[in-house]
Image (cartoon, rainbow, N blue to C red; front, top):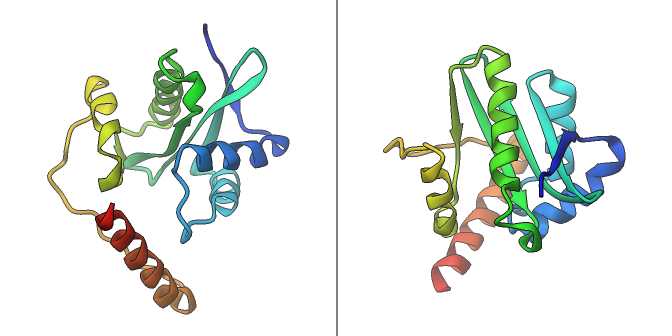
Length: 159
């Protein structure tokens, strides 16, 4: 089966967020609806969706800063995995970055999602041996977000 891949449409947003939730990609401190809006409106991002037989089965967000591209929220419905949908979505995101003259792509894999590393390894993605740091620029949200991340990490550590 070959997935049809297109840019997200307004009517796809709810289904994409539900898909990302099923794929365990959404975290309480990130608003995926806002992330989609920003990607679509900024000129620096895009969201692609994949359909098999008309059903939305995958989605990925890509963006760039002019030097490096980034891939976010690559998710394929568990029932549609192992049919090349993830590879096709990633190839489309890479093509979008390449068309923009972006020479590299970075992506983040959460520590608790180690199973996905072999997928990316087979596609040529390598560990950068770096640590990803962040800072929440909205001071009103920074403390709350840090507390949510600490609570999440504690739950993951407990298994």
